[in-house]
Length: 171
Image 1 (spheres, rainbow, N blue to C red):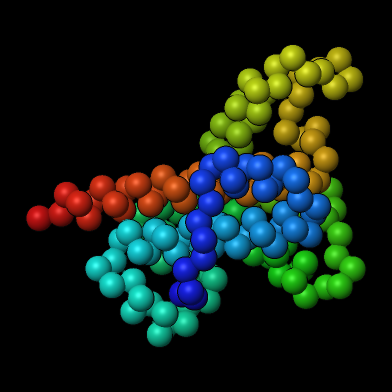
Image 2 (image 1 turned 135 degrees about the vertical axis):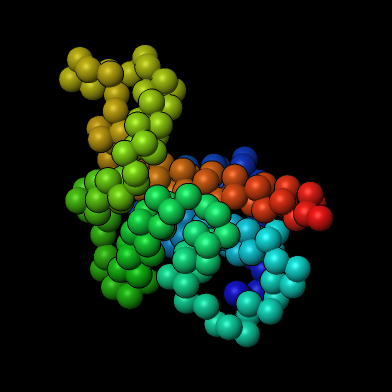
């Protein structure tokens, strides 16, 4: 674990994500997600700072998150986000493609894709694209990726609450 980053409340996070270009959305979104993962560790362990000496990789953090109780189905989209982040971090002319955005969305479990699409459709029920109700697949790549990052953060925030509850009610 690295030095604890400033955590963003929902309003700050949503405002930030709504105003970013693809590079910033991927990099900053991944930083926020990883920071929230580390907050799960701080909530779950008596001395989470001991994890710092372990120099955990991102994949190891994902596995630890699963071991602590987050639904295993989130491992795939967490790793998909890391893959996109690495592309942007290591390629000077990286662009966010439609295929990457669709693959990121597809990395979510079918249950989660249904939930994401239902919420999106409800929020945008009045919008029509080619005469049909708006769907996540109609979004441009940036908006799809942002929606997926927002979803991952929400899942991790839920895990934080669960860890806090379990620690408070232990013994």
